[in-house]
Length: 337
Image (cartoon, helix red, strand yellow):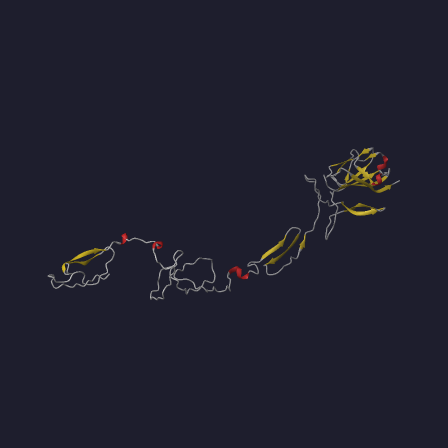
C-alpha cells in the first residue's frame, strides 16, 4: 500500500515541514502504520497537520467468503502459460493430486500385485508394461510334473510305471496272482470258499431239447487263467449222511452221499437266503424203501423219478429263491443187479 501523500504548504501558513510516512511500507495483518491528518481553512490553507495510526486487523479476524457469494465471477478459467525452476510442487497421494509431472520410472514387469509406493509423479498415459517372457520355478515347466511319480498296481496284479505328465504311459502287468482255494468252515454270513477237493460248478447242457445246468466235478487245487464264468453256489466236499439222518444241511456241503436202509423223509436246511444254490444227492439203493422229498421240490416233467433198488442214483436240485422252491432232476441212474 502506497501511503505517501505530497504536502503543499499555503503562503500564509505558519507551519513548515513534512508529515506522514516518508517511504514505502508493506504492513502485515495485525501491524500498524501512520498516515497524516490535515486541517485546512475556508481558503484552502493548511492550518494544522498531525499523524493518525492505522492498525490492520489480525489474520484470525479475516472473513471467509463462500464461492457462491462472489458476484460477477467467470464461468471458466484458463490457466496462463507459466514456467518455474522449482522441481517440487507437492507430493501426490490417494487424496491429493499433486503436480502432473510425467514419470520416468520403468514399469515393473512381474511380481505380486501392489498399489505401489512412488508418489513423486504420474505415469504417462501411453505407458507400456513389458511382455512376460520368462517364468521362474515349477511354472516354467508346466508341461510336466517337477517330480515324477510312480503308479503301482496292487492286489491280484502287480506292475508299475513312472509318470511325469509329459506323455501318456502304459502299465505292464509283471505278475498275476494265482488263486488257490483251501478248505474252510463257513463264516457267520454262510459264505463258503472253494474247496480244494471235489470242486463242483455248473455248466450249461441240454437233453431232449431242454436246457439245464449240469454239474461238473474236478479235484485238487485249480489254477484259473483267462476269463471263466461260473454259476453261483457254495462249494464243499461230498458229505456222507448216516443211516439215522435224513437232513441235508446246505451250510455243510452241496453234495450228499446216503445209503437207504429204511423209509426216509428228506429235509433241506440252512439254504442261503435270496441266493442261487444247487444241491446234489447221490443215493445208494434209493428204490429199496419209500423216499419222500420236500414238498417244495418241482420235478422235471412233474414226475417223481423211480430210484434203483440196488444201484446208484444221482439227483440234482436248484433253487434261486433261498429254498422256497427247488427244481429237481435225476441226472444219473444205474441198477447194479
